[in-house]
Length: 207
Image (tube, rainbow, N blue to C red; front, side, top):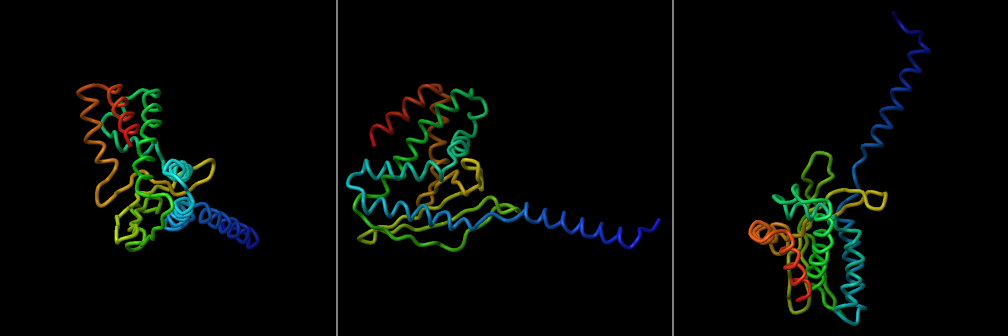
């Protein structure tokens, strides 16, 4: 049965609208490098104005709270043990692990200092829908001191809106998650979860 011309036109318009809506819903995420630019911009300002390392760490913490996906970072770090942890244990690990990440990352910046950031190429997308990406940077301080700092990012929800969030940071080719995984998994296997939390607390307090 053939449709009348006006019915065919209505069907065509409806299909076009549905297609347009689908394209809008499937729109690509914003450029991940812009996210890194913003984070570095805030840290540069904090480093230039902070009087003490504690003050700088506080400022860096505020930035990392909305930039790092600590749950995904934790699960990547405890890849073997994570599925077997209780919800309470996972919450405890995320809380302590967050402190360790912040202290480790913040130590790379000094109060009353300046640094420059260079990008080593464009962002590399690692999945088809471009919601996973790697951004490679080099951070240069005074006296030609430099470190390669690369970010593994996922486009995830933050406070009700989506944004690029880091789930691993690689410093001079050493992944934080993989480096700590080797240490942490051994402790859990030999001494248990509580012993690991105690050792993380000591690491944080010693920094």
